[in-house]
Image 1: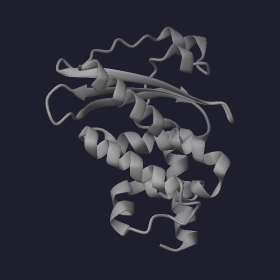
Image 2: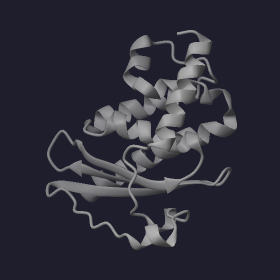
Image 3: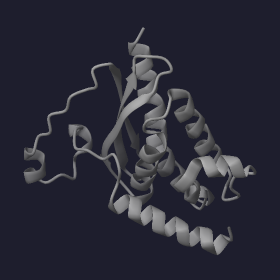
Length: 179
C-alpha cells in the first residue's frame, strides 16, 4: 500500500471510528466528565455474564487529557476468552478510534490472542511510521494498521496506546481475581 493510500485510509478509519465508536458505554462516572446532566440521568443497568470474571482499568494520559475506563469480562473456562469488552471515556479522535478498533479486534478472542494483538499493536507504535516487516502481522491487525501514521508522532503514540494498556491491565485484574 502506498504512503498516500495509507494516509487516506488512516484518516477515514480514525475519523469514522472516533465518530461512531464501537464498545463505548456510559458506566464510569470518573470518565464521564463531558456528559450533560440529561445524559448522566440515564442510568444503564448492566449484568455480567454468569460464567465470567470482570476486570476494569482506568487509564489517563496527562499529556492531552485522554481518559478511558476499560471493562473486560473473561470466561472462567479454559482457554480464557474475552466475553465482553466495553469502555467509557473521552479524548482525542486517535484515542477514541484506537479504543473502537481494539474492541473490534479482540472481543471474543482468547486472552492469549488478545495479548498477542496488543504486543503487535505496540510494535507498530514503536515503528516510527515504518510499519511492521511482516505482512501476516499487519493483516492480523486489520484496521489497526492505519495507526502506523500515528507512530510517526511520539506525542500521539500514548493516545493510540491508552486503550490497549487498559485492556492489558483489566485482563490481568480479571485473571488475578480467578485465583
